Image 1 (tube, rainbow, N blue to C red):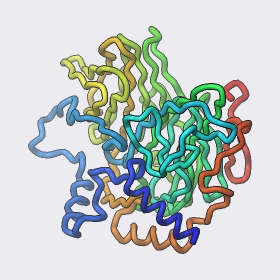
Image 2: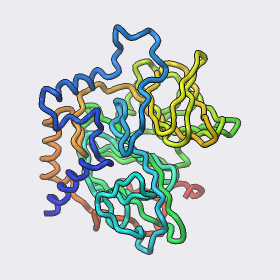
Image 3: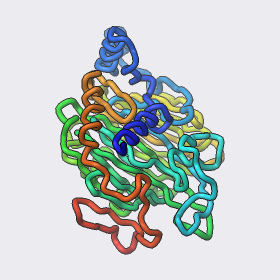
Image 4: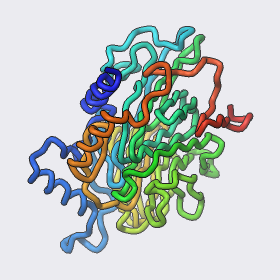
Length: 395
């Protein structure tokens, strides 16, 4: 019965914003001929055309971010910008109002998501990709079927390879009982190549003081390097061993650019076959420019950039501007996704559901599906039975 309930929850997740199928990947419910066409399009995405000009346009495909998951380029699968202004919690770290299990209202000051009293996402399965949770503000409690767990946030980055299958929960305990509990982070899914889709699950925590930051001399801009390197200026944080980001030449990167009015940052050049997309999540507008001119990308908009051209991002308007940059060389394989599972074929998805029914990906070792750690626990990570902590100065 417990397995059936969790499987039903996983299916419910597939229909909601947090785990919804991006439009570009929505193949599992299409007829076979349409799936094959979609797979061919995915496999050739970004390939040069003989009719394309020698110098591609610097900025392409400017469009709204929308609500919930934002479109992502191969090798990325999923991106959500979470921004919730939670009020003070009670002694059980709960919100003042209960959730209905499906609380995704974009107009509300905060959302409960699938949580009942503590907001967040109770246990649910994944297979075939990786999750990267890049935090800016607030704290998150993680627990999983491998017995790993932790409390992290305020600049920490958690990187988890789901691989052959893992069940995890991500809950947002309201630890401050005297004041508000703001929470802001990016939830990202990075695809795994076919050869790595069934690799062993793996869990990595990068504490905030390990995450590289580049600060402009004028103090007007900062780049946080959540994943990948940044040209010859910053070496990449160590990804999980079977991550696509660990492959030489993948050029996987995730940068978070914060600019005050008048701030500017320069993005390094990458090979022409690397996909690069920007998301203007805060502020009025960013000017994307080269020596030959530029184009403005407004707030709450996204755009694709030509990674082979030298480019400068400049904040426009009188507000701070925050931009997420995702990039990577396309994996170029067919992608079939159904909710929490990602494969290369429909059979992969069928096998994922079958395996999950049979094994529950190791079962759930925690006392609750929405488990949160004690209020006084502080930031920590439990990995392979060993508890680790950030440096004392950053706790």
